[in-house]
Length: 202
Image (tube, rainbow, N blue to C red):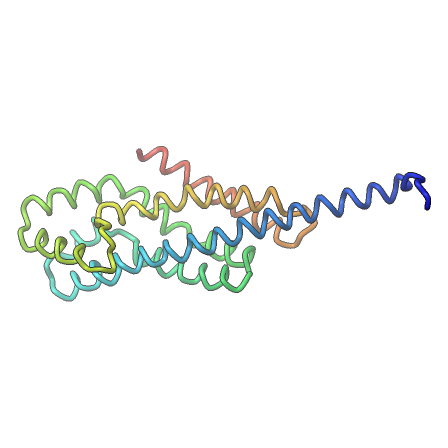
């Protein structure tokens, strides 16, 4: 039995392999968490879109300009994120995030309007009895699980900040020679820009 040390080149190859395996494990864990939280987030967007935006438009309880002021681009955000979720669930992280980032203008619009949305919602709840009653009835639905409209309207802002964390983790645990590395790096820069807008608007 030989106890001779491994040649330096072999030791180096082993340590590189171990590093790649560590990256893969961490990346897989982050990717799983991203998919799970994205599923929950898309469900929250669907609640607002289905039980508020669409029904309010059909009933005419709020005028269009008021609806636009409160809900802004949330329908567009829902559509973009539904597409992202399909990519993530099928394992196409880089491709999905790359496509997602080309539609971040919907988030920028939403973030820039968030303060105004809050004020308009407060005013409507004070002066519009029909809307106040409608909101209460919708929030009492079992699908809402005690979530309030005010909290749900904040979720796109909170999600952008979460993307920042997820994308930095994914990039840090992706080998620079991986085809997805460049897509992830671009996504980090694009999401960071929207995160900065959030800080400027709060």
